[in-house]
Image 1: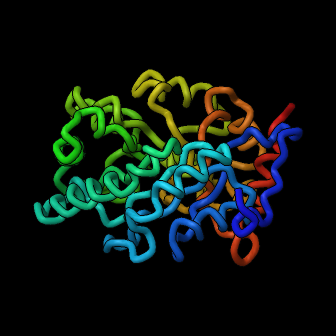
Image 2: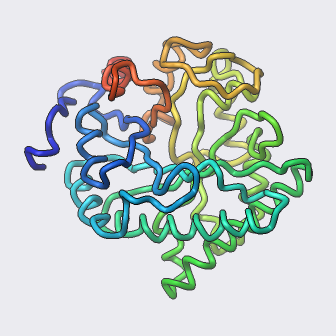
Length: 312
């Protein structure tokens, strides 16, 4: 760990919250080293970032050069798994075949770019919004998403000449709030997408549980946390739960609004997040904040808040 990037990290091994894998979605402007510097500044032990522009164009800041060194440094520092986020414009369930083709091609490129990070020993996942069926119906949307993932894994496998290489960077399906024609609004829809993935690739697919989305979709995390996790386990299996987007909810239970609030400032409330960071089924997972910065450039205070909720 060098002086240039280790400016303000201060989570210590002696505090209960130090073991929590938490960070925020960081800007990739400036490249791999800038990501590390921003993570240190907020005191994080994981983080998210877009591997390309959120609008889908290739990143000018992140290239294959430097990816391996980035992964090696974070691994040496003991970071938890990173949760990169695919651009919102990918729609594997689009009506337009060219849009589906773009999503497949771009996701395969993203996985290839992130593979050197994993090869350097740093676990990294690539989170995607499953897609919107845009009026074709959920069943057709689910089928198209599964088909698209099969194509992605096939491209990565063929390029590497190895089926296992397709899983170097697992793909995580994000639970959605259910606005519009989103697929993935229920655990059953997520499970159906995974079932459409070929058995060769199915082990490479996990799930990110977004706390705001799940609550907005009608899963009562506040009053029935155990029941929600039991529903997840029954439909999908807790073994596939690999990351959490830790977001409070502006509009709350069953609203289908997908509007994030800062921790403790929304309808989920601080007591829920205390449960989240202490329950052994979720406390071990990388947790990424997608909320507004409480200062100009960092989620430092919010990360400290979550760490402070961890009991000894």
